[in-house]
Length: 271
Image (cartoon, rainbow, N blue to C red; front, side, top):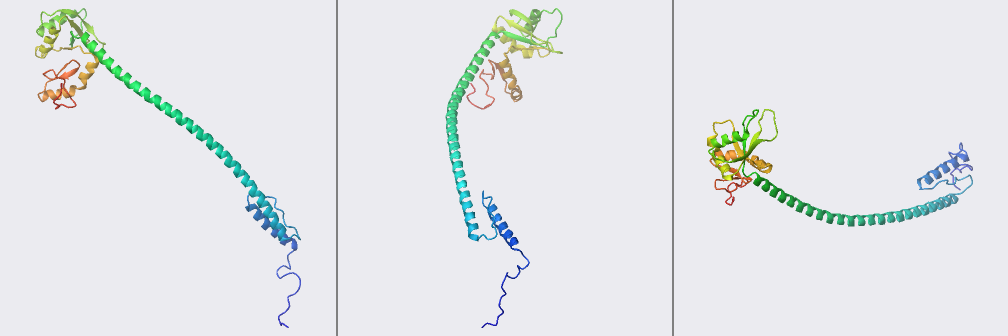
């Protein structure tokens, strides 16, 4: 026989001071922790005194199967709803693409129409400016004559024309023209009967009126006046270098009467 001491019967060592209820509560806490870690597993039955581990495992598996089945149904419902929404959005995207294609065609047609209208507008503006230029063909402006009460503009114009070497010209009418600005006298607009009298006056004005406080100039349309002012600095620089230009017919011209190309001053085809 063995000499080892026999293990005393009864409760195992370390459990003499613990009650059976405390052990049951510990096992119940462990089961509750496992149940809380599983999705949608609640109300897990707590092991009572005398219940075995097989009963606890079976209950947990039953709850787990039920939760998995419920999750599967919810995922299936979510998939069905997602598919329905996706099909709805695809249909909307298709409709938007068709509408976008239609709008693109309309925009292209409108852009073409706008370009045609702009070209037509530019053409009509050019024709109107040409017509207005023709109506001012025989006009001159006297700039710098002081305004006096009871003045006779026709007599003033006749005296000026005499000084520029056209004493026998025929003046149809002469009057003050333009807006009134403080400190500035309005121009005297003169209409002659013959265009050649105007050409002679403009040709002689620089030498004849160099000692006067006034000068004469062509009666330009607003578009021609803007074009003349646009290149005034370049014209001054060219004059200092010996190139003289004159403004006629809506553009600056050389002594040969050809339009001067400011963007390509050395271009051979300035006509």
